[in-house]
Image (cartoon, rainbow, N blue to C red):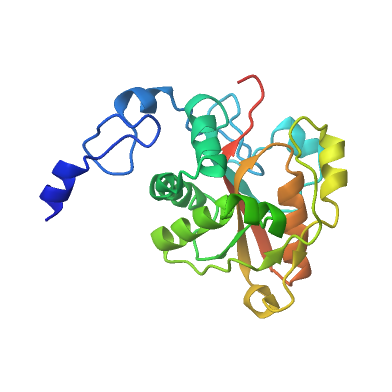
Length: 238
């Protein structure tokens, strides 16, 4: 049956739809063009850094100067080229078929900072934005990660009662000001977060304002420790 299905619907590259040998992967060209983040990275936000990885925790300039309420962080892709196309396809193009590959990469990356199971919590959307998009891209990524890792998942641990304007093009300070108090813990999910290690999941990190607001809300819910993982990271000079 699988061979029949494969003959009718051959595996395709998740980035360009070229036929591939395996499901939910990249073709050779897109793989070569995708900037996966590896080697020496900032232990707090996951951005790539120059130099060799010696096993010691290091921070980028931003994380040494901006207060980061979370513990550690990782990202899979630089938000440029193929990585940007994947993020935008998932976020605005209804390409949930990307999720198996993207969630697998994120699950592999999160093991760098969390050996033991932690509760996976997606960054929430305001209900008006959720109604327009029909799904929360961070939530579907967290669901995919939970399937890959076998870790607990709480999709609505956090809420976003405050509607904020789109953050694209805003300064770092403006982003942080807009997100202040925009994310809160769900009062009916406190028992699932209190005393737990939490991994906050989002699609892309720019300034870190959204992740900071989500982290603070998780700590308000009683989380013992919060780290972050994103599909992509906006990287300087890319």
